[in-house]
Length: 336
Image (cartoon, rainbow, N blue to C red; front, top):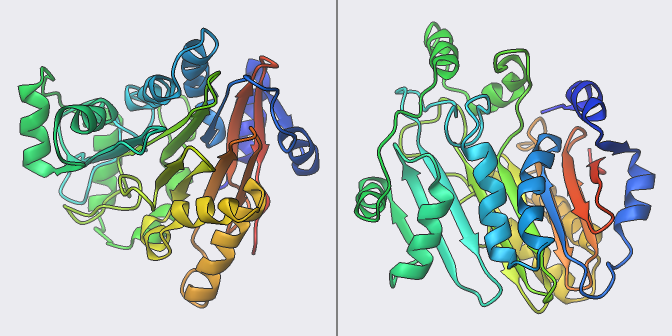
C-alpha cells in the first residue's frame, strides 16, 4: 500500500508536483474561487484520470460526465492491475468488476461482479439512466450491458494471468496478506499499481458528482463485493453538502457506511479533512485489534470547493486538479 517510491520516480518526472503534507493541506484547504471547477481522485497514478476529467470540466462540462470519463482511463489500462482491463482476478481466475456513479440530484447506478466488460462505469450510468433500478449484479448486469451495445472482452491480461498462476502455487486465501504484498505485483516495466479509483468533481455550476470503480481484492472468493459499488460506503454525494469516496479494504468501509459518514460530518460543519478523520477514527474504535495492518483512505470535497483526506496508515496518496492547471499529488495524514 506504500507508494512513496513510485511517486518520487514516476510523477515528478512527468511534471506533477509532490507536496509535503503540511504544504498540501495549506494549498488544498482554501475554498476554490466561485465557479471554479476541480477534480480529485484516490492514488497518485490517477493524475492521468484527472487530466481526462479536466477536459470536460475546463470547457464547462458537467461533473457527472467528468468523473465518468476520468475513471474510464484506468479501466482501460492493461498495466493497471487494480481496475478494469488487466485487473487481478478472483481465486478462480475470473476478472469481476464493481462500479458505481452518483450525480448532483441523488441519481445512482451500480454494477457488481460484472465480467467481460471493460468499462463498468458506463454500465453503472446506464443502470442509473435507463432502468428503474439502482443495482445490477453478475449475469444480469452482463445481459443488460450486452443488450445496450457493449461487447464481451477477455479482461485477463497475460501479466495478470502470470500473477494469478504464481499465486495458485500456494493458493493462500488471505485477502489481507494479498494487500500487503500488492507492491510485488507490478505491471511490465516495473510500474507499481494503485488501488480502487474513486473520483469526485465540482463543475462550474457548483454541482458535484462522483464515481468509483475497481476489479476488487485480488484472488478474492468468486462473488465477493467490497465497498466500491455500494452507495454510502465507497461513494456518496449530497450536492448541498459535498461528497466523499473511499479506497482500501472494503469490508471495513462498509461497516461504518464510510463515505456517507464523511458527508454527514461535513453537513454538521466539519471540514473535508476533519470529516475523513472522523470516519477513520470511528472505524478504528469499532475494530480495534482487528483492523491494524490494513489500509483505508478517504477523500472528500465540500460545496465551497475545499478538499481533504485522511487514512488509517501512511502511504495513501491522492491527486488534485484545479483551475491553477497543474497536477498536484499529496500524501494524506494518517491515524496509526
